[in-house]
Length: 165
Image 1 (spheres, helix red, strand yellow):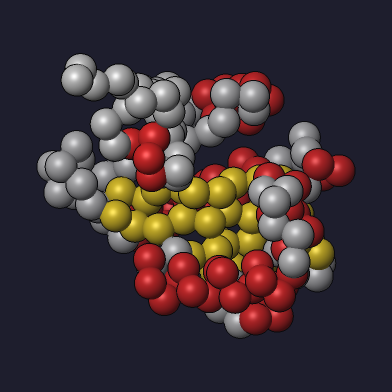
Image 2 (cartoon, rainbow, N blue to C red; image 1 turned 45 degrees about the vertical axis):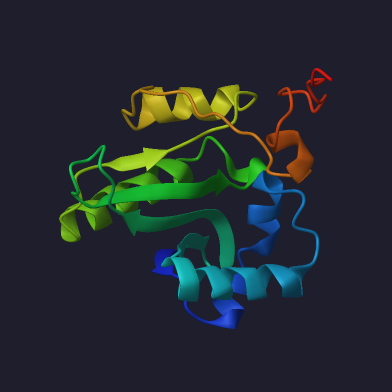
């Protein structure tokens, strides 16, 4: 039997850890993962939804509802994390989870579902475009904020521009 639930309890969140870890391998400590999810839920409105086959998590998505100027202030579901267990791919679980997100989007009167995906995730891109009808509409840029000296009076590679004496 398939169940899709919004994870609210520590136990429900814990059951998603091994699948989420496939997408986010830097998450190595299960207890820290649970604490982080609970913290993000409280401070950022993050929600974790999981698809279970029997009692086993086979797909999980982390999302939040947000508003921005780009969407003219209309709420959108922003998907931070979306992953199906590697051993379970191709069985329709990801598509079912995405359809749940679409229904939730409609229920909340959101205008769209938005997500970013790493450039290396070619199979995921094929899924998003081919299986669930998403469109590539933007590039996502990233620059770490440390060391702070890279951001002040310097070149983008961290070298400081010499000043004339």
